[in-house]
Image (cartoon, rainbow, N blue to C red; front, side):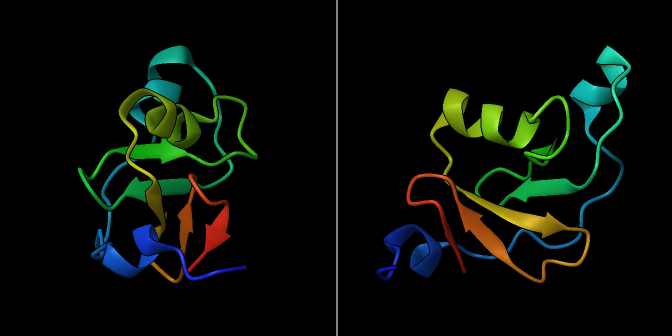
Length: 83
């Protein structure tokens, strides 16, 4: 793994409130939540049925998500790399 420029440049999202709004709207359960460090969008992880964090990346190009609510780690969808 190389040094991902997205992870290096990304700030921190901070704690998120609530859950995955799209899962709630669709009546889907989620496994865990991710917060976009660029805009604060909360989406469900790739282990969830909706995969809304990944869909957010596909729709917006915002590559870095942070584990919610604790922010212990970040993931870059563009480089498939943890930070």
